[in-house]
Length: 226
Image (cartoon, rainbow, N blue to C red):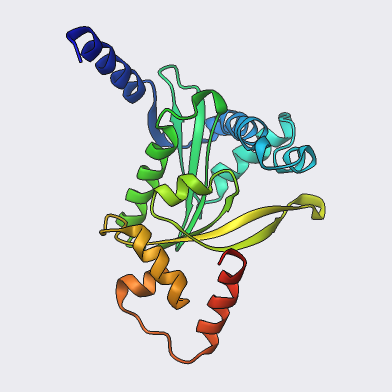
C-alpha cells in the first residue's frame, strides 16, 4: 500500500470514528429517537418483515408519539438509554438497557448503517452492564439483527414471536450473552450451551441445574433452531 492509499485509509477511519458521539438520552432526544427507530424498521428491517408488521412496529411519527416518548424518558427510570448523535446533535441511533438482565434494543437509522454506530452503542451499554454487576444479558432480537448480536457474543436460544400493538405478531429470536464476553471462543460457549441444554451463563459460572425440569424446558426452547 502506497503513501496515498495509507492516507485515504486513515482519513476514512478517522471519519468513521469521529462523525458521531455517544451520550445519555435526554427528553429532548425523543423526536430523534423515533426517527432513528422508524428508519431502522422501515428501511433496514424490510427485508425480513411484511409491510403490515413494519407499520405497526414503527408507526408514523406525530406530535402525540413524540410527547409520549418524551414523557417516558422523563419518568421511566428503569430504562438506561444512550443515543448516537452527530456534530450538530442530530440523533441517528439509540440503545437501551433494562436491568437486571435485559438488553432492550439498539436501532440505527439506515443512513448511518455499517459505520460502527450500533457497535459503539452496544459497547457503551455493555460497559454500563458491567459497571452495574450484570452477569448475563437476555433479549428478543429481530430477525434482521441476529447476525449483529451473534457477532457481539450472544447465542440464539429460541425462535419465537413477539406480540405487537393490536395483537399482530412478528418473528423474533430470544438470545442470551454471558459475561465476561471477552472470554475465549464465545461461539464455542454457544455450541456447548445448545448441546447440553444449558444457559450460557451456567457454563461460564459453573452453576449446576438441579433436577430435570429446567433442563428439559431449555432443550424444548432450543428445539426450533436445532
